[in-house]
Image: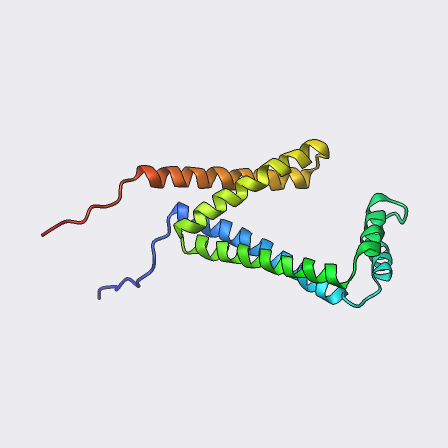
Length: 169
């Protein structure tokens, strides 16, 4: 009895890499979306109380830099600012989700977008590492450098590969 192969797409290393990057992008979008929902939840609340509770929950020094940052943000925030920030997070999540979709489907526009947006992140990330280095900043920077180099290589390889010619009968 002959086995009939199911019609399954053939995945290459490039496909796998693009899908991995797409998952990374959709994860960033989900995290930012959660932050946006949290900002909506903070509206019409006493932000000074929220900052105080956050300092207690995180067990940070009440006189430290981080707690002072929370209190400073709480004292300068209002519902309008929270709306703007929340809508900004939704816009960012939409862009990242669209990019993830395009990368998953191996669309050229998404590869160009990923290349350019990653390139924009690198200079500020390098500056932050030089100013205050830590393992998280270094890890994020290295992941973004790897994505950037992969996308550059992908675009160079696609440009050097001539399109398949159509035979004329």
